[in-house]
Length: 402
Image: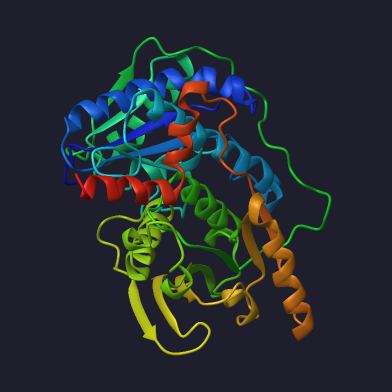
């Protein structure tokens, strides 16, 4: 496993509560410590430190949480909380987020209790963004260090992680580092509220759309939520194809954007979004086959796309959007759409168009918008700028004209 001095894993035990106040009290000191260390390692260098965060939530892989969409509301709320807190911490530390000289944080969800006492299973590898501890420990990710809080629950999680690594006798396994003076808290019985209001559906083709310019934590939340809506491989019908379609706004619709000259190209935005999807979903060993990639540059709706065959049954498709609907009204097989709460009207409009075609309505999942409610008053503007593609482009412009 090659070592990268700017790559780390943070193991987080379950929070004491889904309440953001308690969530923040438990995790903020830990994130401050880890992000400070990564920033010091960068030492002003024009590169980005990768921080993978594994947030443990017991029971995620249990039958009671299947299909995954039953727990979607709880899971997206917890993801919103951790990404919001990352933004708050980077503002406090005056650290760049998702850009050169800063920290690129990527969150996956971890089911610890269901597997922590198991022996290593040869060839075992779960697909993210929900993984078990064995998958994470054996993934051969190039972490230089693995951090964990030096509390009872943190030490338990770290010990279980180390036990998997020790069974493989991998000499290049990343060393474990305890974060001292971490808060202590009691683990709750359950953090998940399951939705039983409707008959849960399984989705083999899910979609999301956006500009995805200068990919930031708001985009990460939205894309991770989309991956959560997809039926996982373990519960899928044998041989049935699963697809995540990402509609990426074409450059023709972006000409009137502020600081348009600093927009990333469509290809760059697709590449970065697909790389993030791979980072949160693909935990196979390094000798796994590379994705087969198809590209098309044809006219008309859905004519321009990049399609990645990641596994025999899993496809990521990045499609150029040239109208308000994109592939949701040209691909009848899509059955779920993920939107942010500020764009919920788009989901209703899509279903109206599908109804006109006589197609089944999409199940629409809403994701919270990252907000500034718990940001110190003096830092609200700084936090908002970290999750605004427009402000990121403005900062790029200012840097270019210095």
